[in-house]
Image 1 (cartoon, rainbow, N blue to C red):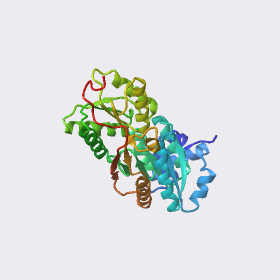
Image 2: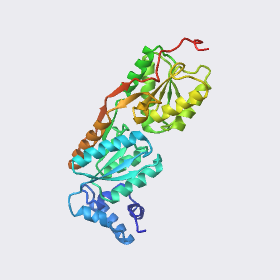
Image 3: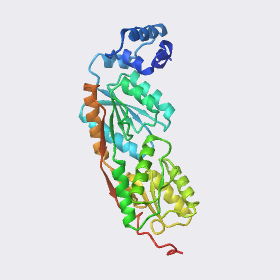
Image 4: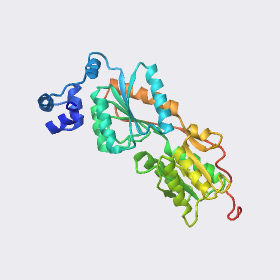
Amino acid sequence: MGPTQEDVARRANVSRALVSLVLRDAPNVSEQSREKVLRAANELGYRINAFARSLASKQVRTLGVLINDVTNPYFASVYSSFATAAESAGYDLLVAPGVRSAGKEGPLVNTLLEHRVAGLALLSPIMRTDTLREICTASPTVVIGRDVSFVDNVDVVTTDERQAAKEVIAHLTDLGHTQIAHITGGANRAAHDREAAYAAIMREYQLQPLAVPGDFTEEGGKRGAADLLRSKRPPTAVIAANDLCAVGAIGEFTRHGLSVPEEISVVGYDDSQIAGLAMVQLTSVRQSIEQFGASALSMLIERIADPDIATRANRMPTELVVRTTTAMCQPEGANT
């Protein structure tokens, strides 16, 4: 295996982002830095691969896509909408499937950059903010599903988390619920934003937030539900981080003899295909998935044309789809 851009960066003692800028012949790089990187690349025998050379000979019509978790139906839907929009606009896609590992996302993006893609679409990345900043310096980038609007030179397409939380909590309080818990999506920015919105709206309703750790998987939902069942006063309603998490929570509640929704109501997030299955019929927050793809592609194409556009954020509205996993709160002791 030949040397990589990471090897060149180490040899020149510069950032990976700077190496990418030099090898892409980007402007606004000092001659001293350019010479340093090119000297290191030459010493290592670094060569741009054949695919990248073919792209360099014409206008690049390939975009790189990093998908956080290919097993999650939400990401499959978002990718599908982005791919449809890209095909309509005449772009090909080069996809790097993530493995829900912040440490592995950077190298995967580096691989995409080595193929000299015209721009990047990152689907709910969980990488460190400083890594993301480097990437946005190296390539036009749009981030979907994580609010990083505080980072320069990036576009963001995400859900209006406060609106979603308000819709869900309004629905549950209308049903008489006041003990409303949240199973979180784990230690990542997207989950943090969702939890923060839940807590803020709960306080607006003068209710006490109760968040327990989980993640965006069925197992995470089971763990969160088990924690709630051990509470001195278990909640009467639960908002899960996503639909998979909600399904796991429902399974755990059922295993312990709790009836959904008669004894505990459960709300998911994403309104994925799972939510609408006959045996599930999950009340869930529907996101504008098709609009996600079209908006993200449009913003990315504009940024490719003008990389110096100020950071933009498009927060999409949501809709609560009410099915059969939420019901009126029963008076304490009504089911005993």
